[in-house]
Image (cartoon, rainbow, N blue to C red):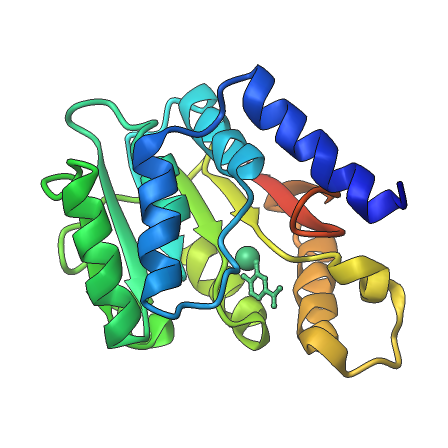
Amino acid sequence: MDMKETWKAVDAFIDEELHISDEVMESILEKNEEAGLPPIEVAATHGKMLYLLAKMSGASSILEIGTHGGYSTIWLARSLPKDGLMATLEVSDKHASIAEENIRNAGFEDQVTVIRGQALDSLPKLMEKGYPRFDFIFIDANKDGYPEYLEEALEVSTTGTVIVADNVVRQGKVIDPETEENNIPHIRKFIEMLSENDEIETTIIQTVGRKGYDGFLLGRVK
Ligand code: DHB
Ligand code: MG
């Protein structure tokens, strides 16, 4: 087996042995595919990781930047206590509508709000809308927005806020200062901003699996 086949097979093994997925999660992926959304949701193993990280951190308020069809949204929503809440920001009306349907079908319509529009318009209004500072923030939207999303995420953070960002390794292209591919210059700027920021402790975890080779930024606000 070549390495990519091995990554996929091991992902399938983990899914099965640890009972990662279930009918609700599978039905969301089916619905998203039927609707023609690009299949860029996090892998189930990584969705479960997001759920675990949020639960481990004791988060009762979660912010997601980039809803897509609501797959990672629902993994995260599952970590919330009964009185917890989540806001998820989505620029595409079509994606937002599909996500809302998925969120309803998963039973989280009372806890999760999809906020439509450009994230950079929505982010500065969250506090005036009455949202608390968030305990957990997941950034997984357009990669050219990552530097600004980080700034805005820090504005709605507090001590202990966990910040996670998807797609920060991109098949290793992140180390190439010359490439324009995959919005790498913006990802590199995002990482540079973190390297210069004393208010947040961070690492990047490289990942392989059925979605290929990529990685997550993990951070905790001091
Ligand atoms: C892609 C993957 C992602 O996880 C994402 O958020 C955006 C794009 C991709 O593979 O193109
Ligand atoms: Mg992603």
